Image 1 (cartoon, rainbow, N blue to C red):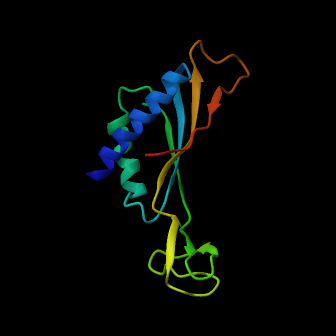
Image 2: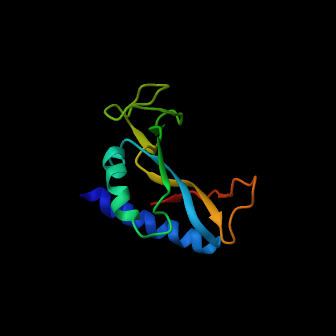
Length: 133
């Protein structure tokens, strides 16, 4: 399962950030996954508990949003939304485009509890960090 190795790589990044921020645990992981990334969100969700077990992110909630497919036209220079099977310019309709987004998997945000515990009334620390996984 390809998604298990993706989760393991993600855990490595999450643990690095959590150590840097002196976190006691990770409470939520936010990802943006493009439709052309080759990663299936549902399979990633299923693989997550296996990869996260016995780590600082063991109880973290995995939140996934879909990234938009966007192209830049080589003819008119416009940037526009596109569909996975039709990477045409949304302005002039030309087929000579360059993919700007939609093939990535990004770690967009981590929610952490810092070492020393969370004080009453405090919701914990949030660290935002966008990285390609």
